[in-house]
Image (cartoon, rainbow, N blue to C red; front, side, top):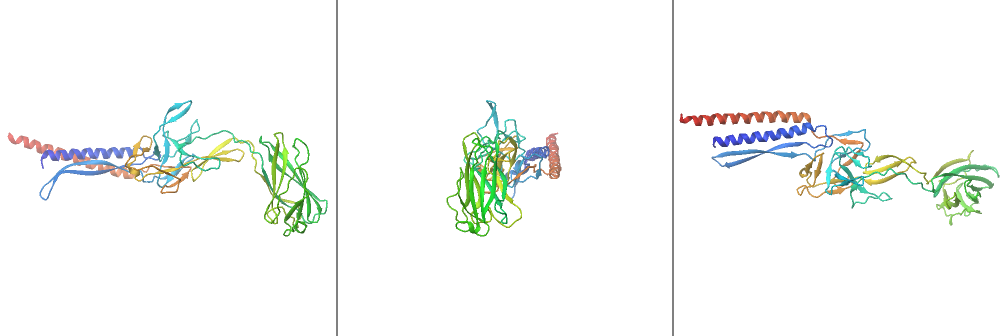
Amino acid sequence: MSLFGSLTAAISGLTAQSRALGDISDNVANSQTIGFKRVDTSFTSYITESSATVNEPGAVVARPDYTNTIQGTIQQSENSLALAISGQGFFSVAASTGTANGLPTFDYRQFFTRAGDFKLDRDGYMVNGSGYYLRGWPVDSAGNPDRTTLTPIRVNQQVFNPVATKQVDFTANLPSGSANGATYTTQAEVYDSLGTKHPVNLSFSKTAADTWTLDINVPDDVSAAARGTVSLQFGAAATPPATGGTLGSFSSATGSITPPATNAQGDPANLTFTADFGQGPQTVSLALGQFGLSQGMTQYDTAEFAVRNNIQDGVPLGAYSGLTLRQNGDVVVNYDNGQSRVLARVPLVAFNDPELLQRLDGQAFMRTPESGEARVTDAASNGVGKLVTGSVESSNVDIASEFTKLIVAQRAYSANTKIVSTTDEMLQDTINMRR
């Protein structure tokens, strides 16, 4: 081996340790960066000749050793929109290329990240701290995601339109010991198509043994007329007879009240009536449980009239009140009328070899031919991890480990400088041989 060969090998060692020092420096600098994945250093030797009698070393090369699959610590965040991934997978994100008509335009390329510190920007998009826009599957009115499309998630803060009441679920117990002529009055509520709430007065009057008359009155109806009456038969008074004090049949319906066509045991005991609040007739179903079952209207021996259930399915006008992220990735808009709406679902993306993704600014990655195709899937399925809401994944850098590697790199660099200086002295001795 020539002296120049030893000098070249030592210089390659200096270069390799310099690169290792650069990786360590980058790791330490990003030890607090959300979603950052550290870069370790691996060394590869190259020789010019090696046999049983001769070994001529050539050089050493430092190569990056990526840790994209190594989990960082998951930490709770005060940001309710923050997301972390427990396990494998990446968020699909988009990068803005500018604006058009006041809204961002997006790069056609696909980007991926583990940095889940998302917040809403002024346009309603979910954007992380590095400026990447979270992408998700849009959903239909039933909450079913369209898995063929990935688009940047934008939160619409418009109002929740009112929904007119279609059904009132009402169940109560009428005291069996009440005298004929005893009357019990209560009130239900319905919403019209404009979101205005209206009372519905329900009056139960005992007319005979096991028989009551229900009078339905809607004071706000523009016709100012009663909705009508209907007779309720319990137990033995029903046709056919019902079990014990359960509701068995209806009869003698008047006005706009319409009883059900059948009254077999287990059939819905639903009465329908119409009311007009100024926007045209509105049909409402008054659900009194099921015939012959104690879950509905009953007549048992109790001291007082007791309402067990009184709810309706209409809603008033609702204003935006907040955003919620679910464990399955659903992005849910909440309204101050108690309603909510799913507008998108956040999927996760998996690769065959995530270590070979191309690293970009802002803790982002791009697919490469070596990494394999991007597989978009629901969280906690097909090899990807779970979503952790209200949390972020911190850097996977261990400061103590980096300082240890720093000491080793420093000593190795110093040792290579000794080789260079020793080789220089030997070369000088060789030159001085002619003197």
